[in-house]
Image 1: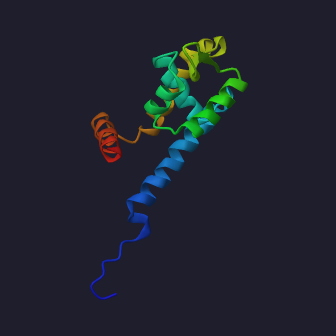
Image 2: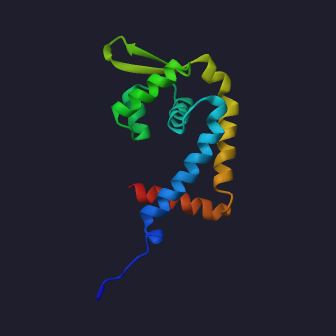
Image 3: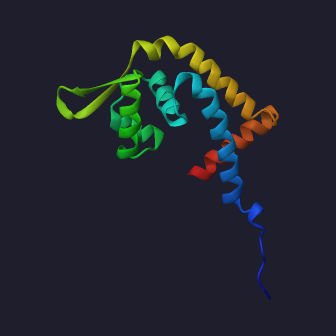
Length: 142
């Protein structure tokens, strides 16, 4: 290996981020069990709590999801009583996504639980480190 620098797989950023993602995803997944939601469904619910009545297309843009993935997520959420999908009168191809009473009734507890999990996941960091860590992860996404 003359002239080559060998990096251990444990130090490759792909490995580090993948393992961190598995841990965070697993933590959220277990906390969402009482709701019967997946982490992706929970993100959809969060987006709709911020702005109800988004079109499926707009929701997909905000969550960076392709239409096929989002369609499956919304279908399962509708089947389980979390959202209502309805066609827009002006253009029947456009789906409007509304929260159900079930979603509205769970809102405060759901958001509180999510905040607690967020804090649990980030508890190893000081406030300054949390802010820096989140900013750095967002910078990677750009």
